[in-house]
Amino acid sequence: MKTVMVTGPGQTAIVEVPRPEIGPADVLVRMRASGICGSDSLYISVGGIPPRQGATPLGHEPAGEIAEVGADVTGLTVGDHVVLNPMAAEDGIIGSGGAQGGLSEYVLIRGAQIGKHLLTVPDHIPFEVAALNEPMAVATHAVNRLEPKPGQKAVVFGAGPIGLGAAIGLKLRGAAHVTVVDVVPNRLAKALKVGADAVIDSSQEDVATRLLELHGEAPRYFGRHGKPATDLYLDAAGATAVIDTILATAKHGARLSIVAVHKKPVSVDFGPLLTSELTIALAMGYPTEIFEVTKDLIEHWEKYALIISDVLPYDQVEKALTLAATPGAADKVVVTIP
View 1 (cartoon, one colour):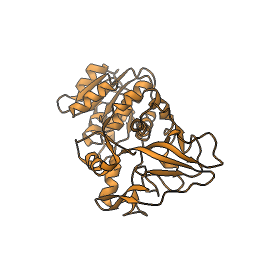
View 2 (cartoon, rainbow, N blue to C red):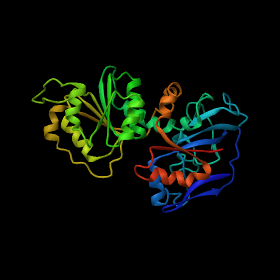
View 3 (spheres, rainbow, N blue to C red):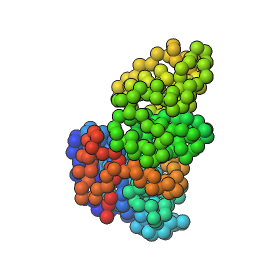
View 4 (cartoon, helix red, strand yellow):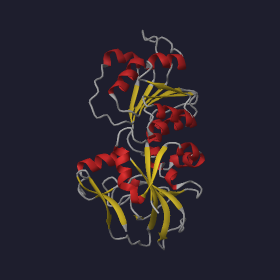
């Protein structure tokens, strides 16, 4: 079968590898779509992930259909459409240092258990949308770290796939008002399409001033005044200026979830921040959310589908990887596999 691998620093190729053979407790999944993540570009740039450096299979946002079912497996049948939990695979994280990648014709799930390794989705959900399950689980974990309550006001910085997924998740959990901040006009337009109540172009508007207009002013607390009544902040942008803005505007008792990867150190002066009693939570992966988000994805798949900017066929996977790695060229790129 074919699989996409990192073959060296800055190099990828479609290579031929043996098709996996299933055991009695296993399921063989024919891959039908896999999204491309920013981390894929990192793996490519450094030449893979040890111990498979130079031979790292790619694709950790997989969706497919069951091709073979082991004799001892129950509850699954050939033809079922499924999403996978890349982190649960016995041979390492799928597409992130494990022995298998979602940008393959087949993936073997050893000791397959429904709700741990995979979950079925209705046939009417397009495979490219089902492939959003993994990144939307990341977004959902970021939202869960905020411990949102119905009626709260929130702001999401960064209108990429994770930020848009977080905006959808916040609205589904009852947020009264969700504002999305970015500097790219088409991303801000997409944020409104997926359900954000308002957007702010931070290259053109002062975020704090605009949030005061949108969310109102929070009550004075220990000398803190003039702060927006924003309850929840979510950083899906990873820019130092975002953190600076949040720390300067946070009202007393606000919560901040950071899901973005910050590539530069961020300096924080905790002195003036003390009276805010701001709760800062970091969000990594999806400890419990990989299949929690599936229900939302199924019920609102047409809204989630708007996050996808480009769908390319498997024979154009090199183009897809380049497109996804080019700043500003695309948002969410998904590769479909025949």
